[in-house]
Length: 257
Ligand code: FPP
Image (tube, rainbow, N blue to C red; front, side, top):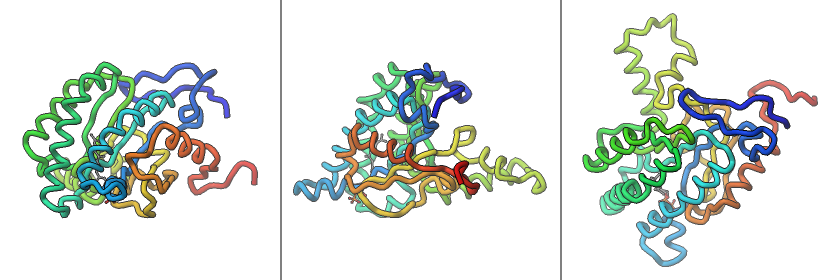
């Protein structure tokens, strides 16, 4: 496939050079979303506490994001904590929230320097106040960055997102006659972003887990047995290669049949 044009989101710089475009951008992967599963199993295999698995999971973000950037991907959405994850033991939940604070403190300066724009998708209300503040600060601090959008799905649920969109449409007094798929898309947390082209799930479960259920209607899924802390650049390249080999038809027919 040759590229004839580069895509640019509002406020995002186009990744350059069709001639040497990396695989993902060249094959139209603009938005990559990841269900980062398997931290607990990674830890159990090593006789470590579950939180050590989450820590290893956060340490993995660096190399994956670096590869996403190299691949010319414009938007990366990471499923960090679902609306259902509150059911986990209190110790694990508070440990995870603390880890997220540490990650923001540790990574913000570098992400900002690299031109990453940080966003949050999900409900902010139940998140501990200190973490809320750090998230708001990270969003504000990076809002003008144009290289890559990093969406952190935290206290996120796809059904809750649709409920929130419907509520907002009612509050805005939207005329039912005007409601169509484009309009609903505009009221979702992801509003003007493209739908994910590829959704990766690590650790082998064949489930959607309430992640981007509207936006993922036509996404390609890639599921690997590799646990999230072991999902490195090479594993991401395998996911991209699998996507490239597929024939996306969006309900139509392939050009060759
Ligand atoms: C699933 O593993 C993982 C999570 C619920 C948390 C993932 C969060 C991170 C890696 C931190 C991300 C941080 C940022 C800033 C995006 P699991 O506990 O369900 O594993 P298991 O299924 O093996 O038990």
